Length: 406
Image (spheres, rainbow, N blue to C red):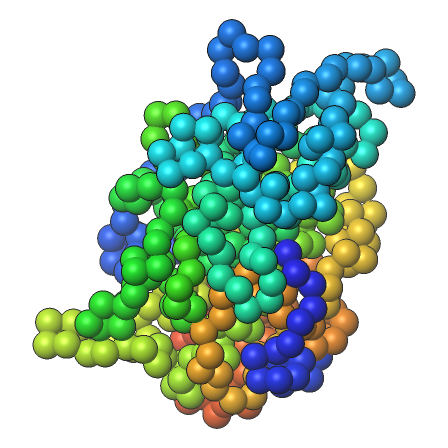
């Protein structure tokens, strides 16, 4: 994930420093009846001792040695370490190809129970290098988007070694819109691991299922796609990542940055500026913003649910220490601009937006952090009180829903 950069309006975002589901899935736009997956996935080649990665002749040699405690661990070889500083080679090493015939490469590279020394953090840097856009303002390529899918498929249902989690979290932050879409409920009708730019084009009503306010020309990762050989389970992956306070901070920052970027693109009535009514469409300009804000609030609630669950089961032994570490790793507060922004950001730029100040208040009160941003936005943009109250309520409902939904 790229840290810093220039805000959409030429400054730091033009800001000032930083449930019970009452609607059935069938009634909500975009919930296509998908059922949660519960199985774990292991992508291994049967009968082979090691795999040769298709990565500009980079050979991944699996070396098993002992760590300082005498336990077996995977030694990251120099050829793989070199990928962390070579994004093009890292992408080539992770890319499963158009038909996913090399999907096992990412698993052989990343899926290890224990990694020696600083190897896990190095692998996290490889993930970041191979999946991020080339530069701020640049869209993701097909190879980068496929690589992100391969990483998620390789690590879904796996225990992630200490040190690797922050790098994987940065990848999900880089694809925050796509990762959020994959966290929706039910099974997917996606036919492949990526969506090409033409698939993101809005229809006659201004709608695209991939999300609102997408930049043209970008390939999107279909994390929600799954077949017999390759599958992702974003719920178990995020749950595993949130055991690490740095990874938690990265994911939390990404959702809060996404909220700011989303709000500043809505109309002064809290509606979708791209909405185009048609005779048979009765949803109105606020239907999809409502859906998106519900899902975003639900994801923030889910992060807090994982924090509570990990504390109860002892995975987080000291909650105060965990929270201090999260606060130390968070980048800060994200505020939307005080006027409507009409640019369309590449997905990778969303989580990399500049902060508008340090965190204020209780950072781990996700509801308060969201509402502080929402209320200030509504005040600055003179959003009608009734609309602002409705947005607040629906976000509250889905935040609570995220806290208790299993």
